[in-house]
Image 1 (cartoon, rainbow, N blue to C red):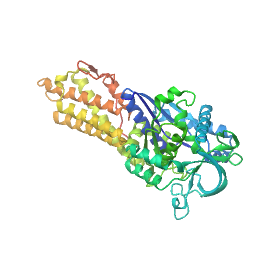
Image 2: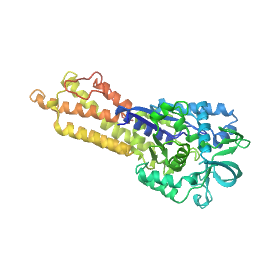
Image 3: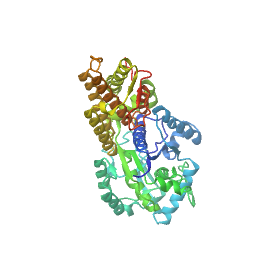
Image 4: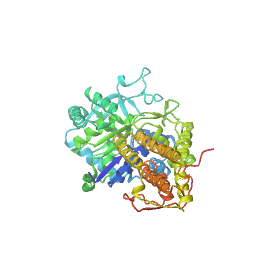
Length: 498
């Protein structure tokens, strides 16, 4: 087993405040990072902010702010998501970092030396929302970008540097053929395969400095700055210290990338071709999630219908928001956000199901066993053990397939079973006359609850740790024979919403 694991989110533009869509991506990546940490791996989890490009430049001008002061202010807002959502990232990279700029210029030189960068005049239709060129076939009947229908398509004509993307059609198709799980889910993989099969057009990777001065200077040409995609994508390796720290880079690269479906082309084709050109291994895997919608409409900064993740987490609690987004929104498809559904999940799944289960088990140990239970394998119900082990295996399969919502569903099936098990066995009846029945029931329940808490930790770390504290469990011991569980303090995990 590989002892090192690397995962990265995309870097959001900082032309507006953080919204719930990026919060979902961060949380999904955090779950996967924590899952691999539980496997004993050294994990490097990267995120950060994309701080160059025309959208950021224009946003600073509109707010009449110094551009550096503007990006500093907004980067701090995105950095605050770490505490607000309990995200355990390793590094937060900013594309204005000096180390990143050095990496971009060195990467450019390698692609240039390979003959994959050239200069030409061109005229295009351009979506500032996507920061991409658009062909007529990619626009809707109104001549608008379907992803950013509120923005006007711009027509541009200027001299730019281009990356020889067309050269990499065959190498990309070979990469996809050799790695059948390179992009998840499958239907997104088929989408990018079909895109590449249709033929690739070279794409622009610079802008004239006199028109857009905010960017990484092009090596050897002071009149140009790097176009945002060429600059931003390189963060995935500059965050590992490349080119200065070759050892760290080789230890962790290649890694897994998680991105929204509107980033499919950039992550799984453009970036991979750039890596090939520079002589690096391609990414290990690309995980593509969908959009969060509200009343069927995509939530986005450009549409102005964003949900503030800081406010939602403050009102409902961090793990409540993590649970709702991970359970209600399918990992690889679009899903709808509503406060009504969030509150229903909170009261039903968290308060009534999980919270009630932990309270019942703790209360029975407190009142009937003087707050202490010494675990003995002979009292463990074999059916409980088998179900718990099977749930753990099912969770692992679901996480590895990027089906985080399905993993949580499996854990909650186990909680459903545990609550039914208590009702069926009625351990509170005739304890003095049937002590072994009581011990068997409670030993089985404490095994199930603490085992499930370990499965839950990547998803809801605060909740898992509260369960550990409730039973004075260290969260690490695997061989429970003789382990002394002790109920110290019973407090509701999720008090019901009024």
